[in-house]
Image 1 (tube, rainbow, N blue to C red):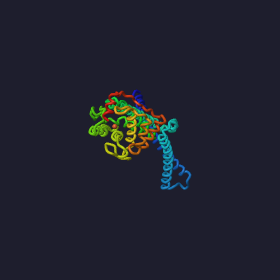
Image 2 (spheres, rainbow, N blue to C red; image 1 turned 60 degrees about the vertical axis):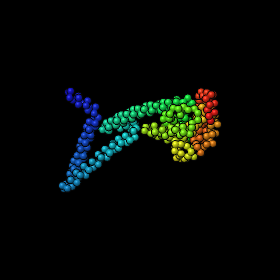
Image 3 (cartoon, protein in one colour; image 1 turned 180 degrees about the vertical axis):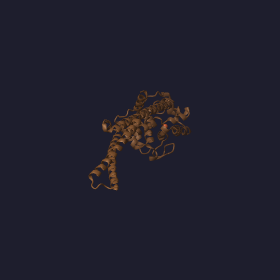
Image 4 (tube, rainbow, N blue to C red; image 1 turned 90 degrees about the vertical axis):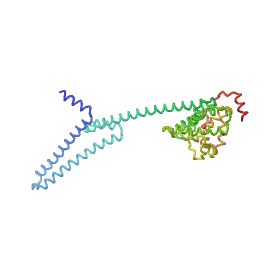
Length: 345
Ligand SMILES: [Fe+2]
């Protein structure tokens, strides 16, 4: 009794075994049906046909009988398999239920729940992986924000610069009709656009007086240094153009490579406008914060030579309609410091 019980529970927990038993039962049914039809065909032939058919005729009748039975069974099986395939392809629970509750389809009624469980397990695993990946991505974004803050915090007048440039760049990209994914990548590139400043010596980054030509050459390297920091990170490689080329100019007068027009990727053209807009609308030791409309005038005048006209137009529209909040941060810069800088200029 114990053996029978354990066998029953083993069978009920292994769907594959139950399916094998059902397939075997189907085989027996088909075998019995074809044999019956063949025997009936022979009996009918022997009783009805006069004179009694010769040996070759009997064989012929047998072949026709079993062929007909096999054909009927194949059609029946084909119809059932087709319904199963359609149910799986459609993925509609209603159709699965329709089959699983049909008593003539007990074999497939067994397959459908197994298939459904397998799909559900895969979906659950996929969802878990997605959530895990989303968690990693959020952590990575937090880290990027932290790094951007560390870059900005080196000097008082750059505080919040990267976050603002990121917000402006994302708003411009969205206004230009770019898809969500591209907007997000442009936002992240803008957030990290000055990451290369970490490779520039403190005295140059913190210098409030105008840079000498030699010093400016060193500072210009923050673009390629930033690219070198990001390039080894697979997930961030597509941000490299926004970091490396955000000081390029449409007329080829920018740096580090002096690229012209379409040679400059859109991501870099957007970051360039957002970066300049923030630099001019916030106070620096060498300049007071300028009014947003005045800055837009400057950017529009430089459209086509330095900046991409489409990008500047998108920004202008955002600002004039009030869709973009312009953050004129008041960083404490002493009057004495401004006076000193003004004298040096
Ligand atoms: Fe820069």
